[in-house]
Image 1 (cartoon, rainbow, N blue to C red):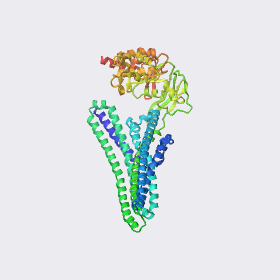
Image 2 (cartoon, rainbow, N blue to C red):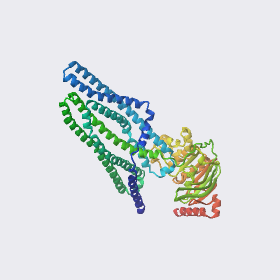
Image 3 (spheres, rainbow, N blue to C red):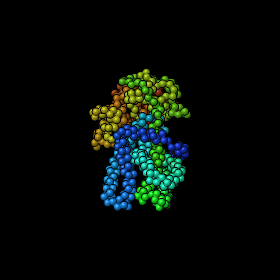
Image 4 (spheres, rainbow, N blue to C red):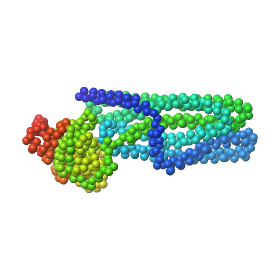
Length: 611
């Protein structure tokens, strides 16, 4: 057992090394403006509603900010230096009115952009979740639940500021900068050129920061993904962790990846912090040039005192947008790092595609045929080797074999969770690849050994098999499998709330609910994958009795290691390493004295030893 635990530890360490490698490769990607424009495309539905209103409010507020220093300059030169009380009063009233107008415009701008941003985030999250729902099983085989979770939550949340403030602030600051530069050149071209000489130096230095900042934020996103993945894994596997007393090792591993996440954040924020001081130093140099050269122009009467004050005001306003644009660029970097990960999922195509002209069957008889079917989960792992099976309409067939023999793979191919790599799977004479996935799967119900119970009531969990079922139909399904007996003993009966995965219920009770859920769907094909493995003998007898009635007229495929549950199957198929060793009824196979005979004898001996 210690070796098993050590294997788990080694796998986790290997996961960390693979993660570090992925960071080194992914962060070399250049900033993808096309991808950012694709992200901005989620604002398109609001291009003629909220966005124009926010832009109008932004233009009004920006126009007021640009106009006020000119009015102050005019007041200094024409109402203060040359006293004119009536003109000064008018100018003060106009400036006050403009500030009120700016306040109103900014209030509506913030409100409309917040609404727009939340709508875009809602649409993006809904689109991503809906797309993930349509992806094939192979996608989830290759990714942990935590890595999927972080895309839908953290990565989308990180772009909230970009949509609520970033886009409109970018337009506002660019308009502000252009307006300030135009006004400064009008006031004094020579002084403007003298001050702007420091901009190329600032641009050259800031350009060197961009790549390092982008790399840092990409690293942060990847570290967060690993953190969330391990957190989800730890919560789901807490019983195993405590059973092997591996809490200390688990805490140590979490501490290491948490420290990695902390260091990534600290590195990113430290690099972000270098930009603002750069702007402040540039602003200080610009102010020094203004005072020195502006005083010279004032002495030469090339600049009035009002123009000097206006120039100083505009110069102070100039560095604000520059600084905010730097911060916005950081927002873009964060959004870019997150959008890369989001679009990675959105660009993922189902490995089981549905044809544009896929057939929709109104009825299904349940006649299944495997024709020389080959399948492998990857190139090195062959699961089925050219098998041929025929399951007639309404027939009950059992699949028997050791773990890894291909039993569950067969049921996965029937449901088309995966596509065959060779041969064909036919249902009612139709290749499953030609059928609509919704049509195919709506006619099939599966009961697994590891039953998943959703948060909600007992009634809602059973109704998951057929959402339009009435309460009476739900109760009839539960009664048919004997689940109603324990349900009525619960505090609120069918309205009893069960937590995620149904941990308040016993394993057998959860299995009975899954039977009721599957039978409520009224499938033509019923698949039981070790469905009775976790049920006690008394419950199993009840289910077997119910199944004899409920399986009538349905095609049933039963996978079971407990061979006593499949004695009545019309055909028993024995598999080994993806090949069919033998098939026939229980009596036929026992007379044949082959692999099945050995399995039955071995189980019988185990039961005798236990007795």
